[in-house]
Image (tube, rainbow, N blue to C red):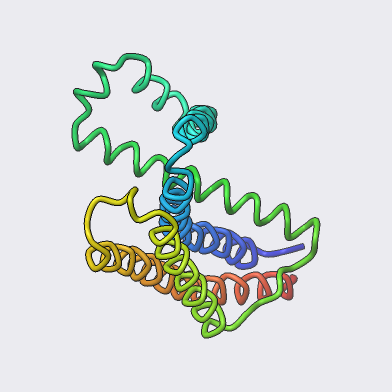
Length: 200
């Protein structure tokens, strides 16, 4: 029978795992925004398809617990969105952050039980992957410009600066999130191992 110290370590491990996902969620949101921007640039001549994607995203967002009713209320009346203040946006962002982090944590636990423990990679390798992915994002943005420069308002130098800045922000956020999450993951795993090996 496990003692109180074991149960406390397990609870702390779960808490650290949840906090780890709260640090990974900004990276996921940042990549989601960057990929959505890339997709919108690629399909710039297909406005109807872009509108359909955005409508699907709003419907999905409206179905989330806690956040969903809040989104539905905001979208129920166009005048409400006009009167939306800074505090409302902060509340919505925090709720989304906490709920999505919890969903990711639960999904990770289910996948771990189903597929087995995930292979742990070194922090250096994770950051290298993030750098390669950010470089690929930058290449995609630049390539999209050269496909049809007429769709862009402004010169090449300005757009190259904007694209480079977007890729840099994505990489910095990814490196930060991966570093904090890596450390928290190590602590959580150590607590779970100690909890699993202690009996009374």
